[in-house]
Image (tube, rainbow, N blue to C red):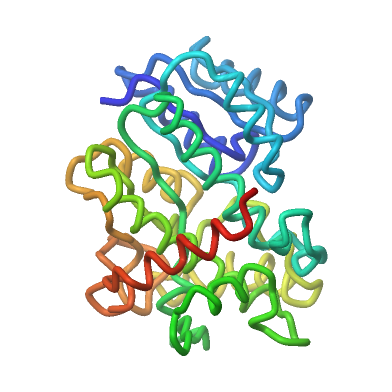
Length: 308
């Protein structure tokens, strides 16, 4: 049982809905909303208290793309917590290719940098007791029906992963929608390496699936945003079947991932091959690079090249 849970990016979308669902579980005593913006965090806290009737929400301010901000946030966590859900991230829009002070581009920094520091600082300071969940994506194995090609790296070497993280891997044609899958792959492999390093903790990677009711489409180019938000998500995907589900369904994957013993450490769970919703399965059964411990360690080493 997880009595205390920290959720990054908890003021909206999947993070907020996950916080709501966790608060309604009998065993939950504390939900920490880890957010960048104080005002938005306070508004989310108030709304969650009204929705659940529970006064168990706390706020920690931190920016997962900023290493120092995350380290300071960990100092403000006074008691050990049971579980962490690393929800913050996404495609982040026009600034995805811009380099941050760490040397990672914004896309990688937002989806990886602060989360790695958060987890490792919590462990180092004996502030994490049970579980970590990282939201990955079906973009890694790809979805043939939608023309989404699987992530395909030549060697999955340390240098190749580092190129993904600083953007040089993609040359002059940086496409955030393509790079997103590669960044998620690097983060997923880091999580799988952590599962081997810390066998007494549970490290689960779980895709929320193609979830409606989030702000994800807002970060896409205008034409793609319009197509996805107003045509594909509400009309086309429901007609196909197995391609979209509601916000509460995506969030429940996270809740189950840290709570249900059927979900094991060191596994990336996502929709069945070629689908974006429905039951989740171990992705390594058809995307076998996930099992390669050398690749996992290479991702870990590449990420730490940018952490100072």
